[in-house]
Image 1 (cartoon, rainbow, N blue to C red):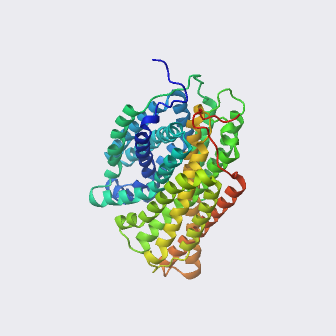
Image 2: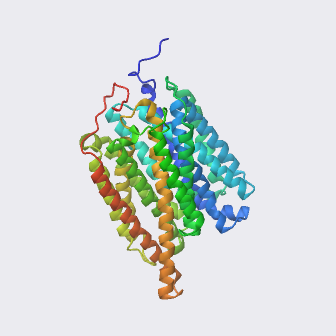
Image 3: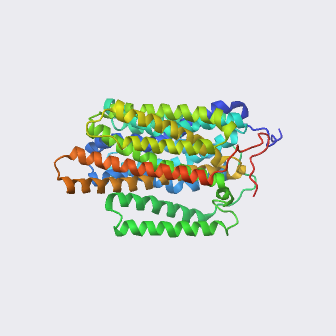
Length: 487
């Protein structure tokens, strides 16, 4: 049987089933950024590690995920996305089983780093499969709406699932639960997907891979150290300087090598570059909400882990509602710019509302309205930005374009968390210095509201940058043609 022509997509007939398995894989990767957060106190009691070491259970995942994403995306382009998708799922399941069975702190951190590494294979493969499976503009809008809703709300669902599993089963189930996602999805992937490898078989860019991996590692590690050791610590400064040097070297290499890891044509497009920046800024602003609002709900308002998870559900529903309806109905008509810019502005308004909380505020009056506005705004950013970031790229660049979306969000999240945590800590210590240590609750609330003001500023900057960078109009793609970008 002769190979089908490019215009007949081998996935077309099963595209909605493929969307389902891609969605499950994406949900698992996003869940794992937050599901372990709620389980940490129980894991700490069981394995006996210190408060200082606790952050490494979260950071190990972010470090390996963030630093290996570009490589993961390119491997999918080179050897076939089906293969990488299935290997990523099975590897993620094995890493989760090791973590769930961990008998020591070192074993748990190793498992989390391994999860991040397989997540770095899985996440770009999932998004690039979506990009190459849905080529009809209307269906593409619906598919990216679903995918964007999962990407945006997965972190909140992770908090709820983590709370339920920790409270009613054991912290270990926050890791074991991935087996229930990964193994059936891997079998479905084997049955439904086709491998369409790049016939030109370009070689892997080893210098670029090393420079980007080490550069991104240094960046995430530097910000993690800023959070724990302070911005002036030699280790913080050393890693952040190394990150700038290595990432600068990476960009210089990419314009000189024959088979670049990241062809610069992928990021030179104004819309695509703007979409990556939007994802990074959203990651920076959003992770602060989860971190500080979780503390506020549990430590100030006295919510249990399960109640905290439930408190975030309206945010998830709002994201799902706006992400799915906006990309299916509004984006084909108005384009992405009139969605992303107001979405950022709505997120900024929501953060300003959250600055009004106090030690005795009520959830319904002071937190819920902000979460609903935030969710509607984020849904308008996520799905359109993901779609624009991957639309019109050469088929053999789809993996790397997809990896950049995840990299932007991951690095944005790491930078935002470190930055906001530092601002929170200095605001609390400043409040205590001015008012005495009498009211710990008031000092903490002052810290939270300071962080929320900065988050509002991050989102406002995002709205302005998106307004200036993104081009107006609807991005047109010929559904019959192979996705091609003019070089």
